[in-house]
Length: 148
Image (cartoon, rainbow, N blue to C red; front, side, top):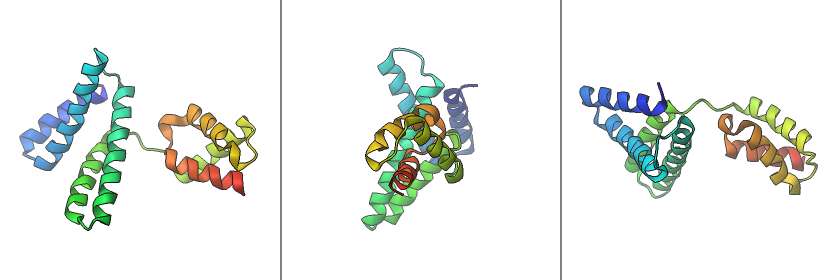
């Protein structure tokens, strides 16, 4: 079963359960999938869906942070609830220890030796582990390794 099919099935389950918050989040995800299908003029692959989910996840995180700094915790809670639903469909990312191992491998493979070689090392790292790694964490760890 593809991710898009699972999302559709979960939408039907949420409708039957009358779970309004979950249904709203799933409908938002599904709308993005439909929009991507129309833009691409065809079926949407699991990779396309994962890219969309990562984009939506980042948007929700950013929006929640903005609401918290603006003193609107009620709106931040809504964004975080949607983020929880989105994260159910995303594969688990590597933890910091595993990311550090991959960072060291990327540094060795790219020959990076100084902080100004960050882009070269980041390129090698993302080429090898893009689907399994948090880009922000990877960048932070690369900067630490190359500057220290």
